[in-house]
Length: 412
Picture (cartoon, rainbow, N blue to C red):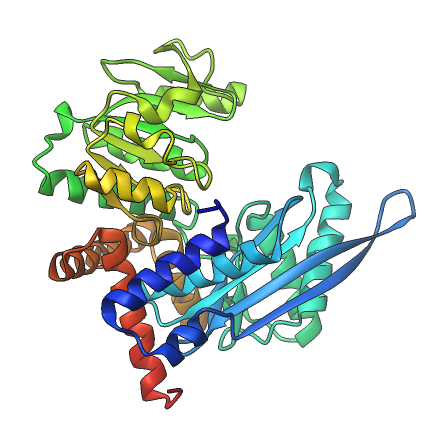
């Protein structure tokens, strides 16, 4: 199969549909976003010229609630990528018991080549052209190429247009503007919670369990630190510049300090330089791919030695590799479960914004752990019931919930 994220999303959907004997009409509905728009954003550049940027928004389905989340900004963005991510969000929300449909947006641009002013004008232009309808319809959030500052601009632009304050209309914003505490840590915390639960079920004692982490950005670093603090042995970590290893375990706290000072894990004194291209094949018990999609393939899957893979990244494992690893007895916690912590806390953020009742960091983490471990347990039980992988179990569980909502609404 060609490594195309939209094709992979449809493949997972078709596998789940076949296993649960989903009605053809509902499969057809779920195989195409209910709405998809492509539009252009004219931006006045600093030199006085105007440049046109292409943007997208996909609303996969809203049977289960208002659509949401992220806004991705990157130069190679495609419509198929946005459609796939909106489908993944539908599944992720259903897996986690979040009353929301799937949404995703994006802008085809390279933020690193824009000044702060140009980037702000681009983000504000996205909201003006998108014309979101608020917290009960469609809620944009952050993704690759956006963050809390971009979300603050989005919220301000939305409120300037509508004329009233509505903190729940935009997700992933700063706490000072009504965002939730724990938003930065959420995905990494969720990855760590799933890892610890699976390790316990597999009889892996933390102090004897070796973990390799590919990707030391926001998700990989937070998950690594949480696992390190829980006595797991982090033996190898990579980023886009290189990798570092220590068979006796890396001090993740000190590595984070080094990363903050230097911008890379390279040169860390608490370990030795390692081939980042081989991080997935590290001799370890648990592997956490926390970087980009399609890094575990049919080519390298036979060389992976981990007994448990926890997908912190979106779609890091191709379907062919998934089959190979499953045949080897490798347990995979799929992305729609493992990295759903961010989506869960976004739901908390909307709840807090609508109620004007803002939670402590401890309360956010406590409720996140309850929600994501429930999602993990449901996926595991569905997998056992159907005698399938946990990935397929998670998709069957999610599509079953979406199916029920569609049938109750009379959509089939």
